[in-house]
Length: 62
Image (spheres, rainbow, N blue to C red):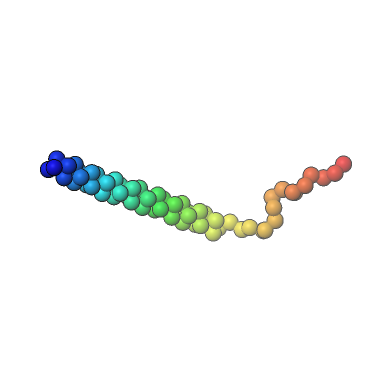
């Protein structure tokens, strides 16, 4: 019975470690996305956009 308790405690501790690791991974990814968004905003501030598409949507007919 004591062995079952130890296994239960070990499993519980392992699940807690795994959850903490997953939280850390999510937090890291969230930070990277935010940094990419900031960088994209900074680079697009200097650019002017006319609102026109760069190419014609349809080809000219002959």
